[in-house]
Length: 224
View (tube, rainbow, N blue to C red):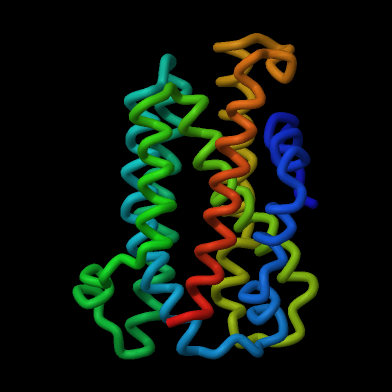
């Protein structure tokens, strides 16, 4: 497993079952061996594009919730990465498949997508930066773990463009930066012994719920 910091590792370990279901979902394994139907992948990609719109807004909310210039910079860099890089991947693949950007942007949002994105935004609206980061982390780091594993295990190049994006150095560095932001934000607000804080279990539950919603998102991808 990838090392994205102590706090992330502790949260991941507290959600082992859902995390395994998420990072080794049948959708993911289908990308690894090339058996995932192209229609299912494109259906997922369109929904994920809509997801990234809301995810970018959630990271913009992290700027609002920040207490230091350093936190604001880290959140702003992530917003830029999502808009300038990750969404560009979706646009490029879909355009190659005959789906123009305006049609991609107008994709109707599935209920599973709605449930996940609004959960993340609500975590930020009703809580502080820690609540928001606990909800954001599973997506960021989970895709990093999946990409890194598939890069070494893939037996098909069918989905290599997707795999290379999340296995690539830019995305892996982004995962490490978010892990560092999570660690520093916890230490600043709770202290270095944050895992012994009364808040810790609630933050872990937020992380676990977001992970479970990721499982549902993959499953949605298999049911166009």
